[in-house]
Image (tube, rainbow, N blue to C red; front, top):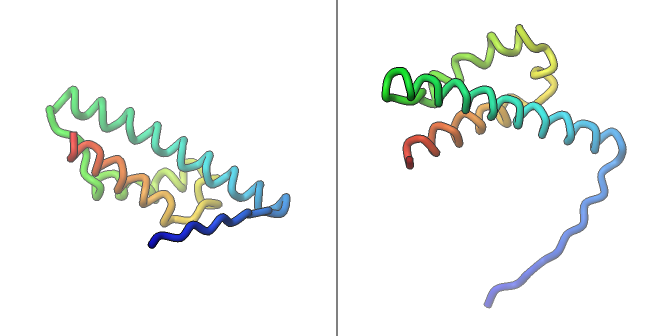
Length: 89
């Protein structure tokens, strides 16, 4: 038998701000890497691997310091999900 548990989360204003920043960084990174992967695929016939995407993160953090405010694991999962999507494609 399955049970359902409903949980309500009520973040503080500071927590809401941090969540919005995190979501925004992840969305920005997804779009940037998606464009880069599509461009690479059109030029070479191959996409970029997860490793290729993750190698770019330190340089992007230097270029865009606001990316440092987000947990690194969140940004790494973007690389994983994007590469997994292209593998499944």
